[in-house]
Image (cartoon, rainbow, N blue to C red):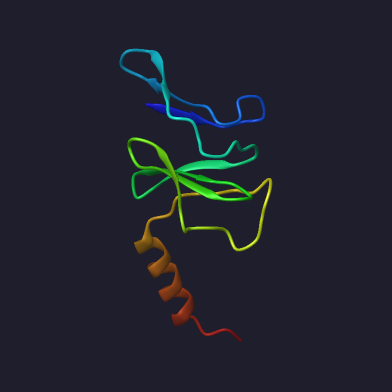
Length: 99
């Protein structure tokens, strides 16, 4: 399915589109309205990263997370990367000799 959350006009609303039934359903509102945020899955958990806070969906409601960006940001990019990928990249960088 497709999850849509927050936005300039909708603020705190969250909706889910079921691809099989082709219907939209309402989900619980975000704790804080947000605009310019990123919604991604972190280990399968819907997570909102915004410039002020991080909210995660626990299956029933949105809750604040301790996971926070160190500095506030806007117009940023987020990509989900498997942990093993970062380990491999770090290993490759450590094994190279820079001249």
